[in-house]
Image (cartoon, helix red, strand yellow):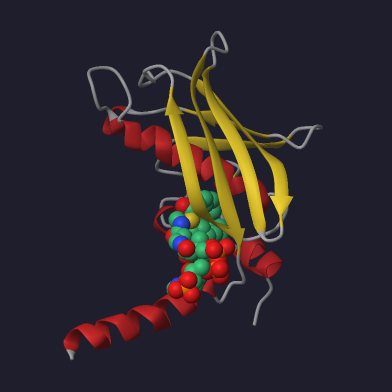
Length: 164
Ligand SMILES: CCCCCCCC/C=C\CCCCCCCC(=O)SCCNC(=O)CCNC(=O)[C@H](O)C(C)(C)COP(=O)(O)OP(=O)(O)OC[C@H]1O[C@@H](n2cnc3c(N)ncnc32)[C@H](O)[C@@H]1OP(=O)(O)O
């Protein structure tokens, strides 16, 4: 079985972020995230733009975009340390409307690690002024790469049960 580090290292990067399966063919994150790496304090930094494809209210992002971006940024913290985690919980605060087609900045970092649980934090700001638009806290559970096979096996059992 491959290690979590190998699994992470084999996942392609586009614009500085590890790509999820559905974005690998297009070579960049569909949410408009580009990664700037870890700074000296261990904080992951990102450039973000919400394009009109995620417009909710007039001129502003759908809340699902903001939540997805924060999930991605907080979920990237362990990846940047070559660890594989999945989201166990995510709490999002939508502090101000997020404008579409405006340069935004994202930051995410680890607050503490308890056993296999990474408690991560992140925020989205307006690049022009640093105004805080949204923030999130989340717990990310460290997994082995067999997580996805386990899911397939579990699903097959469930579907088999449903067919009985
Ligand atoms: C998107 C995938 C990212 C993978 C990275 C790939 C490479 C990089 C690529 C791109 C990176 C970009 C960055 C991504 C950032 C985005 C992050 C996300 O959005 S992740 C998706 C949303 N989250 C979930 O889908 C979790 C769903 N929930 C669970 O799987 C479990 O609840 C979990 C693991 C969170 C539980 O954590 P516990 O620490 O409590 O673990 P325990 O105690 O082992 O399990 C609790 C229960 O869950 C079951 N469980 C655990 N793993 C399972 C599995 N694989 N299949 C089925 N059941 C599972 C167990 O059997 C147990 O159930 P019983 O209480 O016994 O009934």
